[in-house]
Amino acid sequence: PAVLHPAVEPLSFLLGTWRGQGEGGFPTINSFSYGEELHFSHSGNKPIIGYTQKTWKLNSGEPMHAESGYWRPKPDGTIEVVIAQSTGLAEVQKGTYNAKEKVIELQSESLGNASKVREIQRVFRLVDGNLCYEVQMATNTMSLQPHLKAALKKL
Ligand code: HEM
Image (cartoon, rainbow, N blue to C red; front, side):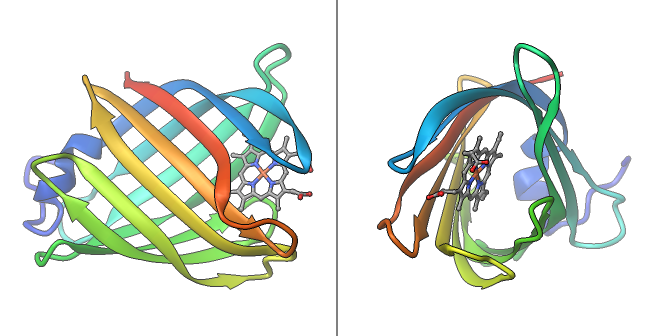
């Protein structure tokens, strides 16, 4: 948009489309690689960033996980995020952002329809112009540990 909502301005570096690759793993599964695209949008009139994600198998292009939601940054440096995953899991995330360091840290406050997932942490960080993130989760059998990490370039 021509004009950014003031609450969104500190995170305006996110806006646009990011594409890249990630690696996944967990003690209970085989590790895997994936392609990914993220899109962050903003209409200007509300303090909201729209978020969509899709992933695919690198060799075949076959769709994997997808999710979408809304990011709500507050002027005090806190942020609320809601995400609906294609697996049926719903996340309410609370966290903080640092506009200068370009880091966003999210911690699940509540999970809906989560099956074996007990906790999700997400950290996003701009590194040399790439958007890098790590997702950690805890399950009913495993303590909090990495499930996903990726590095994405802005298109
Ligand atoms: C497995 C959760 C994102 C691909 C799993 C498992 C859980 C899980 C609970 C099973 C672990 C076990 O059996 O002990 C999540 C959560 C995510 C997420 C909470 C987001 C916050 C993704 C994404 C991808 C992915 C983005 C692909 C790009 C896989 C694969 C497996 C797996 C391939 C192993 C095979 C399978 O069980 O289907 N995930 N996942 N996950 N996840 Fe994720």
